[in-house]
Length: 601
Image 1 (cartoon, rainbow, N blue to C red):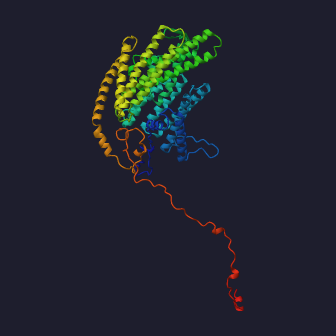
Image 2: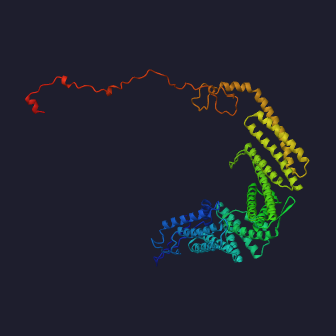
Image 3: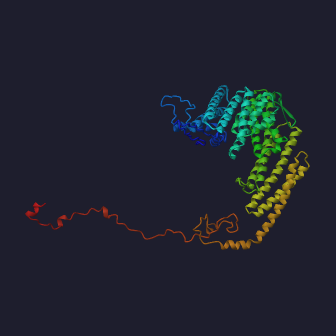
């Protein structure tokens, strides 16, 4: 970044002196804007701290070379950056990117799959200490060499880095709170001035700092934050929140392990299955907490993307529980009672996982239905086709069939299990009607009126049959009954539309046929033709009335292609080269030459 505010040398004329006083130049660095742009362009948009660290390393190498500030050749000789060293703004960039490289390395260790172990955590804290050291140096240099705004931003950056270090160390929460509040105050003031982009960035940084401040207050004891409120804070996005999210996940895992001690049984359809493995308890407890977010009072306020992400977390938790259960089954030995309990628990967890899979696919269906009649908007979202809904309903039918088979398996079935299997069969009837309806829509868009009309009538009869069975069953959701009634009415209206459209097309068929026949040409030399009419006379298919055919039909290629014809053979005299003729030199007349001609040979 070039110098923005560089004071010019000012000379004061003095008759008694020729000395000119010069004001030292002041550099300007938009710290937050510079870092935010680099982070978003080089990995942190997707949380890739390793890529961002590589960028910082490459950026530092370019700065060192361009400034000719390398640390010796062959042998490393460290050069310190002091106030006198800073002769241009790029020296400030050196210090800033060194701090960023250390911070990104620490965050990379924090994002390991199983979390950092003891040695890695010591290394992580060491990198954060180095980031704090360079951030303090950057703040000091900016206070001397930078303008007032740069000095304020550098101070806020150093306070933020100190707060991160204390936050990770789990100690001195009051000092961490003081640093975070100092950074927030600076960004709040800076957000009142400057251009619009800078104001937006400052407000975003203030919002990112707020969860860390609230968590520090919670640890000190000056806040009454509940666990649900902490989880809501953890749903916010931003690079400044990744350390907070990691800390929150560790706290929630510890809280789950404490609560899991009281979770000794798993209830499902009137059955109670004991849970002996601690890992299984924690996984099931995590899944149940996530299910409360989906079925709680605040579920309607969640967006579709967040609900899908929550479903993915639920699936991960239940799969982890199933793997723990099956490992316990493998090590159970010959204890029949333990095996029966574990098999029952595995069946119950698999059934709940099947239920959540059906709910997720129903959510995908609702998203696809909302995009079915929508045209492409400014975001260029893909419009849903009826075939995609047919595929989703195929998945739902398979899910309900698998769940019904799972619940129906076993010898001693309780009444709750029988009722649940009947509900699965009733839901499959509704899914079949919906699938038939959207299959009819796909045929209608393809211009096949007869098939579409037949499928609409079939979907109407399936919906009517499902409604009759639903009304005799009291446990079915009213929402599904309402959707079936709407489907029944739509099937009736669409079948009438298809019937009328088919009659209109049949009335106009002779006119359309004559128009299409008039477009038939003898050849198709200028267009690619798969097959000509004379080549498929043995096939019973229309060449002019099919609406799916884009190219005009062609009768035969003209002019016709060249064909090979027989001709007279070419006679070649091959024996001439093989004949050895006799010498005729003795019969040839010889010239007589004199003595003088012999001399000129």
